[in-house]
Length: 158
Image (cartoon, rainbow, N blue to C red; front, top):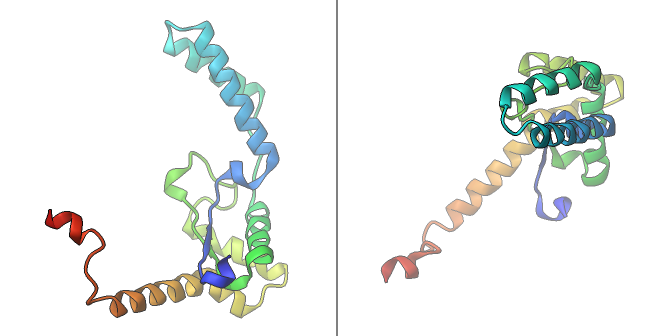
């Protein structure tokens, strides 16, 4: 539907969304935490310590910039290069791909996409061009509706 409505998928870097291995690890960790909470109902400290032991014995699988690039390329294949952007969600995730820990590492992502053959034009769209296009369209709609009453105006008047 994105080509029809002009929208953009903002691809995030949540490792659980990037690889099945991390998703399965997260599910196993959640199950272990639930088990520990049932066993040690009176001790949050024991639950935390045992969960930490579990994590040591079962290290989280590594995700990399290549996994993020795979995710971005999937969206580009499904929706098109005009409908993909970066929405990393870096402030909302507990850990990041190993070589993509913040915006300072975005060059790693762009280097990976260049290695895969992305054109300068498509990289520019990903880097912000697509989002700017959508924002300009939203501003145009806003201007065209400036004389329209607010959607809730009848309710507010009562």
